[in-house]
Image 1 (cartoon, rainbow, N blue to C red):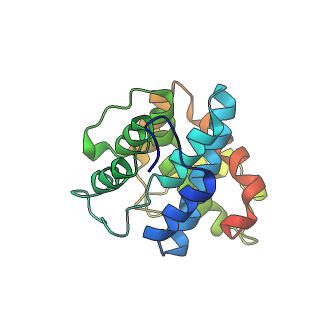
Image 2 (cartoon, one colour; image 1 turned 90 degrees about the horizontal axis):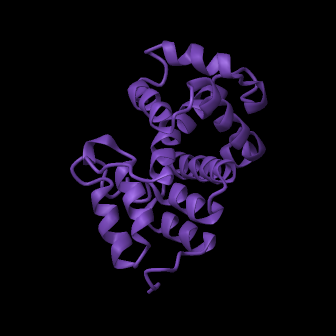
Length: 190
């Protein structure tokens, strides 16, 4: 068990993710959010490892708790048993509006803002003829956001609210997500 002030290593966090997550798509989503959180931590001058591990673990319990009544609340219980720092747990609890957990830290607000958007950007790249992230532009992401039939399960309202909570315009936020994801395109299957 970790002390309350310690954090899993990246390898330990990845092993925890794989213990609970078998879906390739969900693992790739976790990697995308991890990479985006690392980029955003660098942008804000914050702890890159803390933020990246928070992004990596944000949906680790989704397959065992696939409904709003249990995810991510059930995952938070598991993380507390493993003595993961409360700052990480609170950010994970706040990444979904249905929990009612306020996003009180910049890390929590960032996780909320990039979760849906990172998945959406990957979806935009996947429908490109060459499936290449370097071909995706801010304008093409915004155009797809207007198409309600495209990636219909992605909450446009959460994306809008996330940018607002960060005090960042949507174009800038999309630009950060693209910048974060491009170097890791191969690990995302792009």
